[in-house]
Length: 136
Image 1 (tube, rainbow, N blue to C red):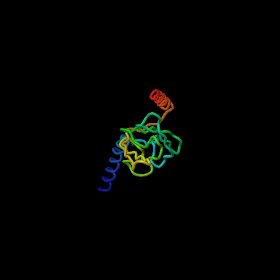
Image 2: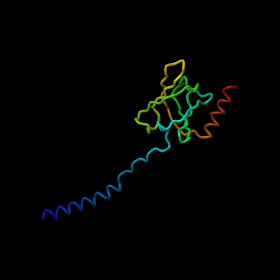
Image 3: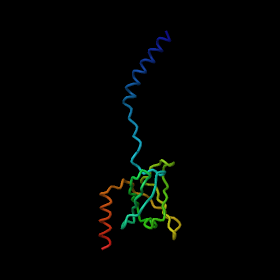
Image 4: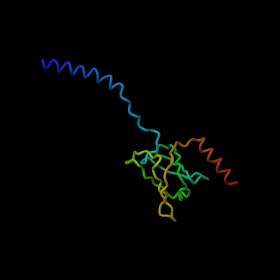
């Protein structure tokens, strides 16, 4: 008798578990459009903007790194490093992470990141136009 009741309980539990599993929230998809720490290839300053710069990853995607305040040394292209809140080479660089700029005259400034976004041709044109108006 116990075996038959156990089988019925197991079958009933499976019937209730299947709809519950189907209604479980889906996991967020992995970020594929982020700048990964281990994929950085190069960087360059944005003329006329001392609070942002562009990073190119190994897939040749371009990202604009916006800083919370001016970061000395970035405009001279001497070198930058990143300290992320996540660990590992696949960590996505994001708001709250830190840029460490390297300059021959300074030890290394730590500058917090306000945002990271794909750098589109329209953004590049706007940055060039803004740099042109600042020099006049």
